[in-house]
Structures are given as C-alpha cells and as structure tokens.
Length: 85
Image (cartoon, rainbow, N blue to C red; front, side, top):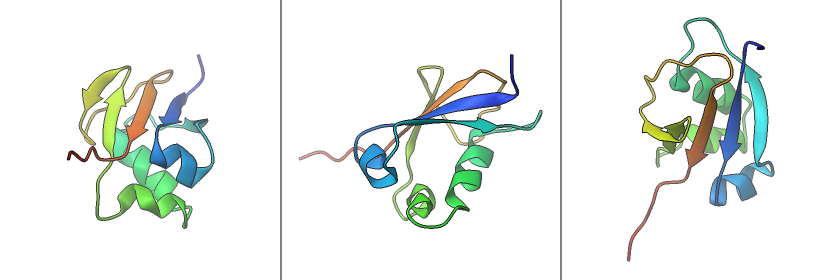
C-alpha cells in the first residue's frame, strides 16, 4: 500500500477543477485539512477549496470534518456546499 490518498471531486468542483480524481501523498500525521491546504496552495482554480464557501467532506464514504486523520489508501471525497430552495 502506498502512502497516498485518493481525492475525488464532485458536482461543480469537478467542473471547476477539470478533474474527477487524483492521488496525493500524505504524511503519517496527515488530515483532510492538510490535503485541502495542499491542493489550494496550487493557486487558481484550486484555491476555490478554501474559498468563502467551505467544501463538504467524506472519508471512505462517511461524512467527516477537516480534522479527520487520514491513513494511506483512504478515499477523500470533496463536494460543493449544498444549497436548498
């Protein structure tokens, strides 16, 4: 097993970032927040991940907080905020 996580993007995020999935290396103490910060540091359009509307997060198909620790092989899913009407 590699020291990476799979990051998946859904809905508007997938369109904005022009990708639906990528693999990122993680540190042994890595969290979801670390992954988001790493991606956002790439600049536009990735900085949308730390914009004024926070993304929703799931780790291994369970809703999670940014402080969620990650393990190699985890799947992190990022969704745009849900709006109702």
